[in-house]
Amino acid sequence: MYRVVMPLLCLFLVSFSFPNPCTKYQLIVFEGSDWCASCRKLEKNVLSDSAFITFLQNNQIELLKVDFPQRQKQPADLKKKNEQLAQKYQFKGEFPTLVLTSLEGSDFKQISLESPNTSQLIQEIAIKLTDLK
Image (cartoon, rainbow, N blue to C red):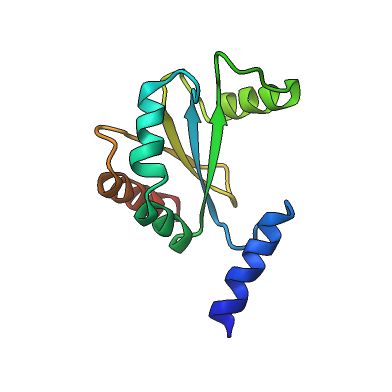
């Protein structure tokens, strides 16, 4: 019963913007959704891949996209929040940039994107997870 109830509880809490008790880590993706070709390729080939999504869920990792569009306008509060996250995680303006962080601490690890494919990114995140534990 636990295996059924807990995922449903997590889904319920996420749906209503409550803190997700099923998440221990965040994978933050700094992207330029409306202009960055590499960001679009990462989204299409990796971030939306079911194997990647399953890996994130199994490892209690929440995906957080921090967008810096050039053509689309963002609300001022969202733009400010994105800039604060960029400063906190030492984002240097290279798109896309991935950062893995623990929700319990202030430690974080940058993820390299040599060639963005699902299996390589999963391996890289798995290595960084052991550093954060």
